[in-house]
Image (cartoon, rainbow, N blue to C red; front, side):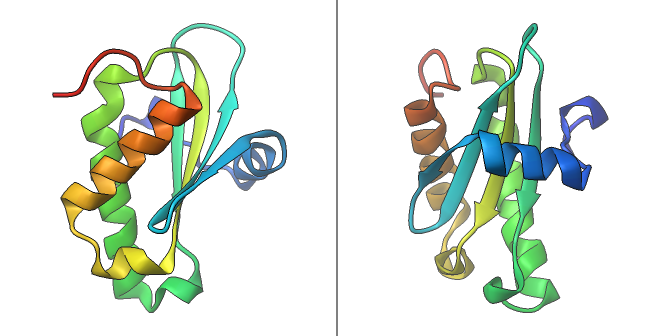
Length: 117
């Protein structure tokens, strides 16, 4: 689990990132990134709508996205609010695919620094 200070939980925070942030789209996920003023703090939020499926599918999608984000935390450079939204194809994706796609989108957004594992 992500530390409490690294989680975006309030719906107003999500709405702010959706409206002011920039989006990066793939067939598995959509990433919204909003730079924050200040130090090197970041916050993640994860969502999976009902189009993903029932509760089991939505929870699996969020688990995959959270674990992929946890693996990339050491490489985050800067201060950002990041919302990761599941898309329907995530139901058939493996963890490695989700992690690779999240890494690609965050790199394109300028969130990640350094090289991969």
